Length: 354
Image (cartoon, rainbow, N blue to C red; front, side):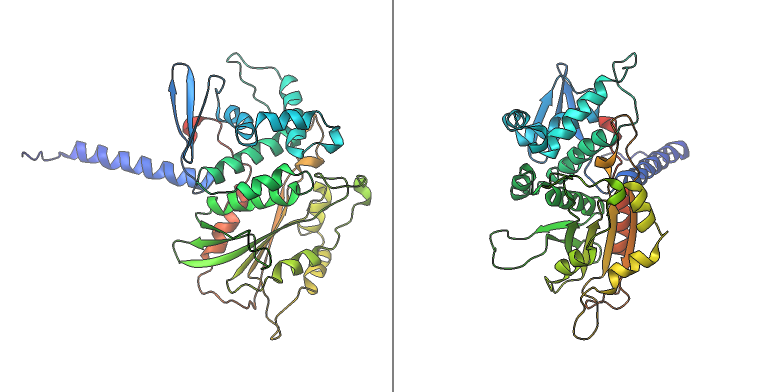
């Protein structure tokens, strides 16, 4: 065996190449989180996509969003979609409404010379694309979410299931390992799921709570005019979450489901008195300690947008407990959760972008 001695130019080139790879990975993680790279190939004018242990292909996919638009129906089934379309629009699942509105939006855009549509998506299009991307992110980790998909098919259960899907995808972006609870243990109260930080080996319980509002996101009743919408009993949602009394540190995701301007007023820091009032009456232990460690406040107002307007702005805020029941020394996991939450909305345009 012969060994070739590297000269300075060869060594410099190798170091430079590794530095570029390292930099690209840092940039990818910064934008999209610690998700798996897109695994795809092209053959005979078809794109082949690997998602978890499954393989999908089509001649129509020019961009990654093209794949996302179709991916939902590969999971939910074209027959289910066709059946939903026979219903009155008020009885249709939100996924179907978003998809049909997205089709209307794309049909009103002018493609460029390559046949691609380049436009700022409206709320419905963003809602559908981000739903599909979250679904892809979770299934690409080979996580069994059959029970969650069953709930997503149900118009009434959709809102809570959709938010849980968002939380699962966010935790995957944060680099956490997902531990699903046993849904068959119906008599036992349990959190949505648990996550484990591989860097610290700390396991957290995660609760996902989304505020229901009349006539919105599949909920029964008439839609309340935006000027009459109020924050509602958010404290009750938090107390429902902490009642699980888990042994692990608790992270709660709390979706306000408010019109964007109102969410900016409440969550964005312009009305701290209203926000603090929500947390004044949260249940505590007999020793006066908080059951929770971190509450992530979100507002994803896609469905409050207009057909011809860009996707409404998303609002976020955080609440840390200074006196939690489960004390942890290393809080770096919280930074990962925060970054992953803010990465919601970042979707690759190209197959080789991720």
